[in-house]
Image (cartoon, rainbow, N blue to C red):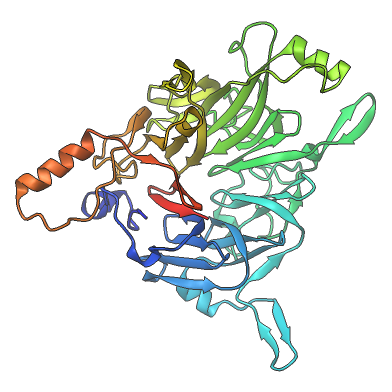
Length: 459
């Protein structure tokens, strides 16, 4: 396990952990999800129990805040932690320990022996399969493929201090309107329906992602929709006076990236603070329509190649496109990631290496390659973006504008007393790269957070 301490830019030099630090508290614990926010860190174990810790949180030792509620995923926004349970329910409570102890929920659990007892959280109505959160908004994907948004927080009095930037995606809550009351879900109805042949039909959303003040959604047809703040082009839309804020969903269109006859189909979306990513596959349009006309069994599906596009603010190198840019509205290919290849000894030829896992933080990105598809034992880890707090895990504070390898983890000192021994260990680390994989029944996973990163075993 590795993580950074709670910190801000002013204290980065004195408190940043530039080399990974092992957290012995979580030794031998299988983990389902990890969330690293500015004020606290959250871990969900394989049983769905929730732990929190951090200097600002109120305890530097992990505290088990929920037990027995089978939590699947967590998101934090505006001082509130939102938790997605295994039954599709979303519950929420204050983020910090002192506020959690003082929190009075409107939910109770009935016990035949002891009567009713107050629950430590409140609920949102509905059944959901995924959640994501920005600075002041929550995005929830329902089990039937609809998208809902809500203002976050616990009190109405701070709404006037926070600006609406179109992040809710509904026509009656635009940048000209005040923020809605917190924790009230609103359906993004313009995403849920599509007009075809003079009929209105349902559109199903399959993926969601949220940045600071913007949202991305992927539909069943492989099209990406975006809305919210677009100051840096993080919506993948042209930036001008009329499009700095786009309050309702708008489709992202790729221009000039594929040759004639190729039809790009999106398969995933990701979002960081003020930047975004989308993964596409290139399909032959003639083959695509032939299969649509003759049926799925007319011809075997061709082998697909993934293409990754970045857009938004890349001043910290967080786009990974090989340059530092203030604004990138036109989706740009991440060439190094798209062209990643290696020699496969089994087939004795050079083959492409796809990406296995993505994790996007506030201003840095971590990807895990899928080298094991090519008969490799482990998978390489690539990182890029901001590194002022050592979140790239390479022992430095230099940011990277393109994907770079992470050195092997620096294990705890085994007792060498000489400077020469320590220098040799550091030299060996710098000359080798971090590789992770499946260990028994668990998979090693690296995640990015708010100027922090973590490596853990996922159940």
